[in-house]
Image (tube, rainbow, N blue to C red; front, side, top):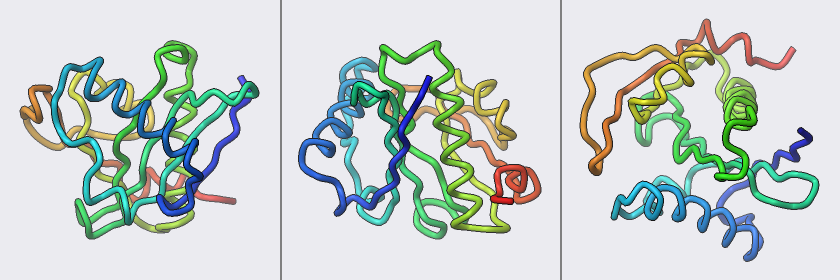
Length: 159
């Protein structure tokens, strides 16, 4: 699977790419997961956003990288979403690996903290994330906090 990765600030999206990005987030987080909450929030503007498109130009996955000190002391991946057509293809692992490479380059020597949907604990665990607390409810969906420390992030650092 060939994926074109693009990192950009929110202000650098062109209108149609931004529409596709926000529509995918809305389609999955609000509609598919039947969770009425404000998907767009104050973390979007200061974050970097990653999109992954296939050769046909379809958006297959996206996420945001929140800088340290805003949501958590550490940088944080969030709004991780894979288009339904790309699920089960390994796209999620490719997306997280690309995000962790960027995070390691941008924030060397720092780990990551995420608030993950609880059913994805094993998925994130494959990338080095470790659960740090009890399950909690966020907008009607079970979540857990997970971290990957700076030493584990080193495997994603540029050579």
